[in-house]
Image (cartoon, rainbow, N blue to C red; front, side, top):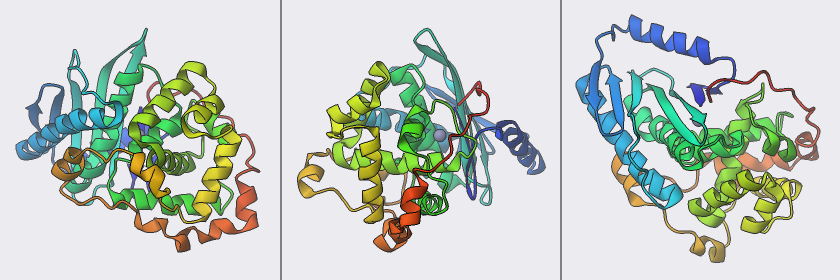
Length: 324
Ligand SMILES: [Zn+2]
């Protein structure tokens, strides 16, 4: 799984090789050839300094433990082989990450993770995002729909990053770059215009998680994967008739400024585990991204914006990436 991200957004399809080269060149120019290593039970970290390698390795283990419980209810068993993490850390480096792995006959292995950014953003956004990919891969043992995977991974990023996704979402919905839900739910690969997939995926994952919690979200994805009937899975877990109805309900919610769910629903959602939000991150989470204000969402209310999501031409996806 690959999630390349620069300062202005995630760049995934087709940019992987160029991005990897850019990262290695950056490291070379920064004189970081002599990276320091640090080994934990499940990770082998290479970072510019010993201190950074230790911080990243310890944080990765903590996220792996607490986020697995947060999503699935149980910690992950130890991997048979550790996941190598290569970290490029610099204050002005755009935040991004890439995690690749191989599925074969119900198993997942050959982990590789590359992360980059400022120390703060690596620890509070890139690492939990990429670790969530490994948790999903270990739990489901098969690829998830891209929106459900990237969307959920973005919900564990820092509020600043989530607010940025919301601002981008409004921009995409008002400029004809929204993706119709039947198309988005059917996507098994990244679309050519990938950024709207991240923004919409995040927004829908957030909507569902705010109404049912993370365990229900995982159960919903598991049902959808098993049956390949996402309308039935939505109906069973969220009481929505079908995928098209989900789009209608979600769009209405976005138009209203993404209000919190009714208290009766919110009360049923278990509170997040404190460990990953308080200990590892060091920054207090903001339950409502700043960009989620009604004012920010107002442009979606125009009729032109409402129809734009329905009028997307079906795009052909370019090739099949070997990694995600
Ligand atoms: Zn990702």
